[in-house]
Amino acid sequence: MDYNYQVIEIDLSTARLDSQFAVSGHALLIREITNVNANLAVKFDSTSAGSFPLHVGDHLNWTANGFQKIYISNDAVISGKAIIIVSTGIAIQKLLRITSDIIQEGIRQQSVTITDAGELIPAVPLTDRINMVIVNTGTDTVYIGSSTVTASGAATDGVPLNATESIVFNLNETVLIYGICAAGKSTTVNIIEGA
Image 1 (cartoon, rainbow, N blue to C red):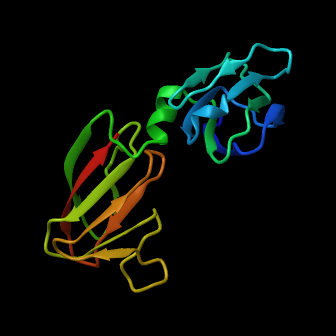
Image 2: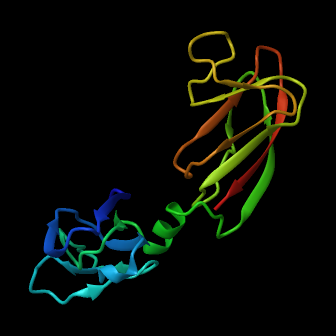
C-alpha cells in the first residue's frame, strides 16, 4: 500500500452544504481553522451519512477500506480558511508527526566515518524521522548527496561540508543521504536525527 497524504485548503467565506471533494484516504486531520464560527463538518462517501463536526486538532481514522470522497459543509464567515489533511494508508499518529515540525518521539545521535568509498548517513535511518543534522567533525571535506554522490569535481558532486560545517535536512527515513570524501581522504560526521 502507498503511504501519502494530500492537503485541502477551504475558503470559509463561502457557505457550503455537502460540497464534494474527490479525495480518498484512511485518515483525516484538521490542521487549521482560522474562524471558529464557520461550523465546519464532514461526511464520508455519502450525503446521507452522519455528519462529524470538525475542530482544530480533530483527527478521524476510517475503516480499513477507507473512504472515496468527503462532503464538507460550513457556514459563511467574513474571512477564514480551513486546512484538512487526508492520508492514505498511514496511521493518524504518524500523519500528525509528518505534518508537524516538532520532534515528538525523541532523538538519536551517532558518528559515522566517511571515506572515499562513500557511506550511507546513517547506515540505518531512525524510524519515523522528520529531520537530521550532519556536522563534519573531522578535518577533510565531505560531499553530501544521493547514492550517486562523488567528490571528483563532476556534476554529481554533492554539497561540500568542510571541517566544523553542518547541514540540516527535513526528511523522513525513506530519503537516504550519502557522504563521500576525495580519493585517499576520510573524515567523521556526527549526526542527530529527530522523530
